[in-house]
Every structure is written in C-alpha cells, then in structure tokens.
Length: 176
Length: 176
DNA sequence: AGTTTTCCTACCCGGTGGGTAGGATATCCC
DNA sequence: GGGATATCCTACCCACCGGGTAGGAAAACT
Image (cartoon, rainbow over all chains, first blue to last red; front, top):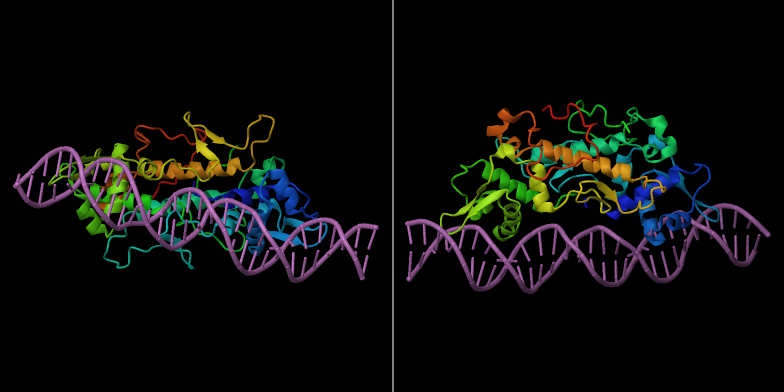
C-alpha cells in the first residue's frame, strides 16, 4: 500500500463530516464509533486537517468538528496532502517551493536527466491530477449528481498543485 | 514517498540493461558501480525481476543479466509490480484474482459502497494506467523517438492489468 | 584449478506506522 | 459555579519493514 491509514482514516472522517450539517459540529467520538476507528488515533489525524484549514473545531461540550468549506470546494489532493505530507512516488521526486519537480540525482546539465525521472514525474503527475480533480462532494452520494464535473475553478484551495505541465489532462474520467 | 527504493533502484537497473546489447549479459557488479548502488542489495531486487521473467541471467564468469524482451515490450507496470508487489494506493483496495478491485469494508450489497472506495480506485487506476502506458524504451533516449506513442497493443505483457472499468480512460495524456 | 559471477538463506538495525496514556484547556448545561 | 463533554497537546510505546550486510554454495568461464 502506498498511502498509510492516515490517509484512509482521515478521508473517511472528512467524508463523514461532509454528510452532516456544517453548522452542527460532530464529535470525534461519534465518528470513531460510527466508523469503527480508534478515537485517540483519529485525534492526531484531525489535528493535521485542522492545521491545514480543512476542518474547524469547537471545543467543549457539544463541540466537535465541521468542514471549513463546502465539500465541493475541498479537493482530495488537499486532504491527502494534509494527512500524508507531500505527494511523491519516490524519495528523489519532490516538488520544491517553486513547484518544480526535482530529482536529487541530476545535478549537472550535461548529465542525462536521470532516465527514470520521466517515469516518476509522470506517475506523480497522474496521482496529483486524479486527486485534484476529485472533491469531497464526489465521495458522498447526495452531492454527487451536482458535481459531475470537477471543480476546476478553485483547483486546490490555497496552495496550487503543479502537475508538471498544464495542458494534457484527461477528458472524460469523471463519468460515473 | 509511496514507492520504496526497491522500485527506484530496480527501475534504474532495468534502464541500465536496456542500453546494452541484449546478447551480452551485464554483471550486477558493474551496474552497482556505475549507478552507485550497493551490490548486495541489488542482488535481491534483480532476483525479483528474474522470477517475474523480466531479466535473464547467465551464471559464472562473464555472466550477468540481460533483458528477456526488447525494451519496447516491457511495460513499467510489470517492472514496478515485480519489485514492489501489487500496486494499491491503500491496504483495502486490492485487485483480487479476477482483477476486480475489492474493498474490505463493503460486504453487504445494501450498504453504501464505502464512499472512499471511489477515490482510491481512481487513484489506483491512474497509477496503473500511467505505468502501463510507459515501457522501458521510453526511459532511454536512444529508443525514445521510436516509441512516442504508448505500446497499447500489448498493454502489460502477460498479466493484464484491469483499471476498474474499460472505457473512460484519459484521452491525450501521453503527448510529450 | 581458479576466478568470476549468480543464487540463496540468514541476520541486522533504525525509522515509522499505528497506536495508547494522561492531562490541560475550553465550552456547554443545569 | 460545577460538572460533563469535548478538543488539544505532549509523551511514550511497540511491531513491522525498508534497506541493507554477511557468508557461502553452485555454476560457468579461462
């Protein structure tokens, strides 16, 4: 498996929240019970989501968590990155601050660009593209009919995710 | 990182072999030296490649490894799967013997299909698709001009890789 | 025979995934 | 105010595995 349970559980929590009224926070305890997941562990995950601004919390009795944005405005790329950290197929392919995909191996310009770099950048691109095209709303049946086409308008919230090159995106993947 | 160095090093070895005359086996020692990788570790990796029929070995002096097929006929999906095992974004999404993507959570038919399953199957599909569309030949500059379009004819060698559903694949991703 | 190489099995070791524990703090209801 | 209910935060724990090393047996060459 390439993503840990952090992503698995975290996405599950987000999907759970997306089904609820955004104004009434849901306690983690109830989510943990409903999903059959350990509460103490979920606390860690949801903190990551909160620090990235994906959920809001209300403390105290009758407190809990709620989405900070409507589900259609939360791309799964954001969610996964908040939970797992930067999305890279292997160590040496990392998007630096500029968003450029860099490979640790190719330093000198004369040196051929690492050969395998082309492979991993494509893989990375396809993963990020897929995750960016889906939003939380696509996961929950109630919202699904309304958001058949991906929310291209806001793409990835704050931090825009580069996909190696702009054009060349899939055409009709979202047809369910 | 989602793939370990097994995939990274293994792909590097395969790319190295692809540049050589297929009739003259290359010793792992020379590859290890050229790529700056530990020989003893590469031995493990190359055994996986051999058991999957991707490389052939000749023992003894002047022995070594060579590709068992021309580079255009070796999809990167095969290579990565030989090295890393089955490609799945998370634990619960695994292609079973039939090639169907199953999720451990959804057992009963009435139960909504796990919500998150849609996400992970799409991610899995996009990874596998990207890997299947590339061959070893695409990694080495000499062969690259000849194989600009992906080898759709043989797809993935022996074991065909299912991608959740047949139609609905991206249209012009492969244009480089 | 001796060298080179693959092949195989066993071992090791640090990191991290996947949690648990326990308390501090904030907010509600009575 | 005083519980009760939550989030928050820091610390700790443990099994597993990624990423190797070690050492030798068997095969093929010169």
